[in-house]
Image (cartoon, rainbow, N blue to C red; front, side):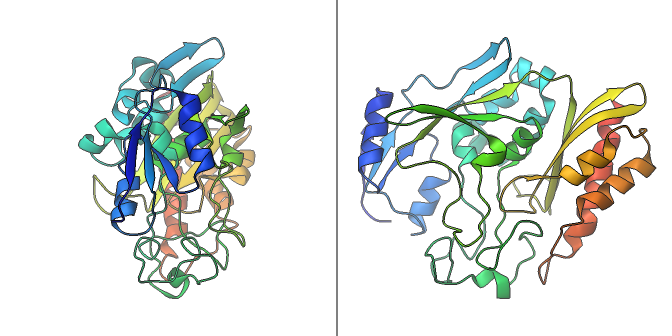
Length: 325
């Protein structure tokens, strides 16, 4: 690990100004991803700005929804009564992330910004366009069982690792950002970028900008998160799915569906959502929605199995959430 300096701040403006003016400075709160990247030589920072003293850890009910401070710990959010009651998909996604020890330390803002878990990205021995643009993508010709079947490009096929981001995508969450000159809100659908020809650009965050909160609108949708992985805990998703349904009697009025483990960003299944509108709740409808969800799939050499897994995961998630109605 390269040497670095450390500064603890009590002013949000000072923290933002420092990182904006120094391209090798970085914010740190939980540090559960950043420190690993620094130790592996994948990411460097000459100064870490500790933001744990900033007032960004509140979880507040509002008239239009709920606001989660960016340095709220994952475990605090997962067990918050309002989250469990009104947004169970968030609690379920968080409790299937990492380990209890990491959830006690990691923040929701950091979770949304964690870097991809592609082994080729995290090992500087291999070429990686995300790490060094123009170097090439070792995953495309390498072992790519964990990689993308949607939204990839010839420059990068890595998948986004956050379970929380998938749940928030199904809830149409907004990311609240503060910069040196202005604050702004970005839909989570727009916040993450597909790799295209610039895989090194993962989000719309500008230098010095800080995620300060996540806002989730009120919703009558019933939600559920399903994660399929190689082992029961402390493992990233092969395929995950967050579903949120608005149901009237035995008919689906509208649906929101997002997949994880299959794309460089949380993947919104718009075709499946459109198909489910007005459909009767039954396995026939769910199976057809699964077929609609995989129409754009383009598997890699070692992950064609994810296509069938996406379909089955969606059927299972829809079945579970409608059983509870």
